[in-house]
Length: 292
Image (tube, rainbow, N blue to C red):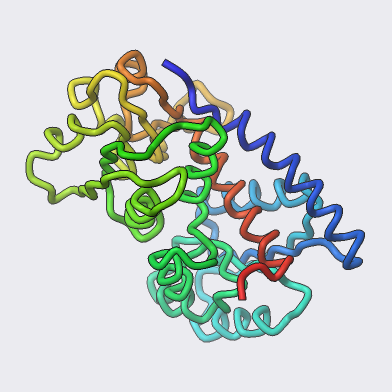
């Protein structure tokens, strides 16, 4: 068993991003600039956004945070997005999810200029990804592909089973793994909570991408020997063992599955760290006008 070490890979890639960002500053007189909009006081969202801001500082980016309380109107948020779209000093814009129920996340996503959509959720970016055209790839799938590339994992001709069909992870992962690229060229089965006999599909997989949002869902009896396992799950449980007061678990029963795998990503320390890297790389691409 080999570890897909997100800590190691993200640190190496962030070194490269920082060097490119410094070069951008020397040529343009400003840093790549990421703006985050945070609505409300959700604990998980606070943690994610704070991490993104810290990472921007580490790689020579400028970052800005726009805060609203839970009662802000949808129109006020949309108007702020329009203002940021028009601001030439801003390269990337993210709106942290989840949003309060009175704010439509689809409206928010479609209001963001696709050229600043560094989360990769805009329909134009998703459509371009489908056609293998230049685009911002959703940050988590992008990070996963960067990890596979770093470890030079051979994916061509492999059978990949993606567990979970969200627009954020599962669906784009199925597209990226099937594309004519390296990593890629997989035969992909996209499964979800309504798939009948789901364990039987998982057992056939050379590559498993677990993104269904259920703690320890993938168990050892579902995994064939030598499988490559990418655990996207982040399931929080209260814990007195940690300073934060909670403990993270993946969608894969790591303790019992690891010995059967050839490669496996841990939680924490795996895909979550690569998501930040995907976001930073997208922001740098935006600053350099690589997507237009």
